[in-house]
Length: 464
Ligand SMILES: *Cc1c(COP(=O)(O)O)cnc(C)c1O
Image (cartoon, rainbow, N blue to C red; front, side, top):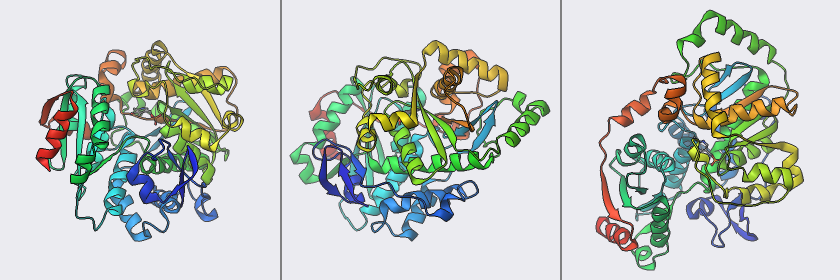
């Protein structure tokens, strides 16, 4: 597969170069030259195939000629040690993307990326050092994704005192090939330090440096997998048994609720393509969904649900793209006013074609809180604030008469226990998954540095 930069169609590279460089030299994002189709036999079996087989078939054409089948299969098995269960809650499907080690969907992309990097750099004797700046969530997923991956070291920079205790343990509690720097400053300072280090010629001579931010194509492609798995199952009317860490209270397991769920399972055997709602911020997740749809997953439509940072819903309405500063909300992983993957979406789709497949909707913090409370009362299911934006987005479009045929599913992007400070006052304590309990037991081991580039370069020179 060839990839080109969104800013220059003639800047063509292979998967390895697109993944290992991340951003194109002209500042553009790499996109695949074409979106492959599933072979007919795969397309018709998406509902019954197991998750890792779907992962293998989905990723294979994007790495063809660069990662042989046997190695891809090993990468997939080692990256996806968890799945994305599709369960029924009230009148819709929920696709739970939070069963990975950091309890949010970014685990899928980060774990695949780490293993792909390791494979693509086989035979190199110089280890790779990856620098990541984080405001909280990405750092944990990247740290965990690369933990114990051979030949790669990760340094995460986070704003000291501005991440939650859980996030700090996810970032700075692993040790081994992962190190953490608590920067005396803001997230923007962390980002500035990383950018300066990556551009430092002296450092680059002494060590292989790279970044692993969310625009990396190797993080995006593996996210197409759970769309195909979810759409395939929903299309066939098959739900998974509740996952081990599925945040339901005992109320939901009562015979009445179960009967209701069984009934839904029957009526949902509609054999119609599904509508999937994606809580969105930087729009990497939704872009991966568009790839899955183009590959042949039975999706009829996407709903892009945002909080009040509604740059993309406004664009879908008006045709005018107006990036703005982000506003803080309780679904803070979606507080993005200038979504970087929009550039990727528009490389593939015009405004008209986007409007034909994506409905935009924006949800306020009050609506988000009301939804968390209501769905817990009615169905015993705990939604995290991001997933609640998705649920409410669907409600709003149903009310507006904009969703007609076929089943509707919501991608739940994080486990509610990860956002207990918001969820607990509204719905009580959600059951905490083992992965988060184990993370809370770790000791924080980070070095504090001032928000100065020289402090980071000194640190890097010392450890190498
Ligand atoms: C990152 C994140 C999002 C937003 O995903 P994008 O790909 O940036 O649109 C939504 N929910 C959670 C919990 C996240 O961590």
